[in-house]
Image 1: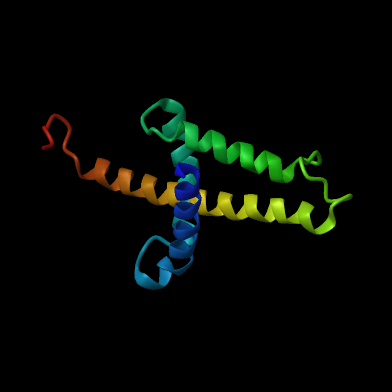
Image 2: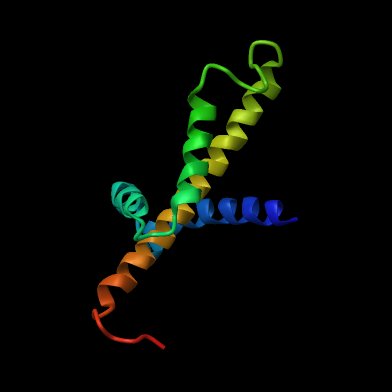
Length: 118
């Protein structure tokens, strides 16, 4: 059940991100530009996106790798469908995570060091 909700959230984020530029939200360029900062902040421990980045990296390796769990050579259409689902999930996850990261960055910039937030 939780897995289905996460998958649904990724697809919803993908749809929102594709239309966000027209509605005033962060565009695709801003999101792609945030990726290096997000990776750096996660690696330094400032941002809590480490596990999500690891899952996105694993999905990227799965799609790019010549070894596949469902080989395209033998199962033509079905072999491509699993890659398509993975790419769609990956795109939605990257968009959702960059949205979350950009919000985290904005909140962090607005916070004055040494103050207590309620």
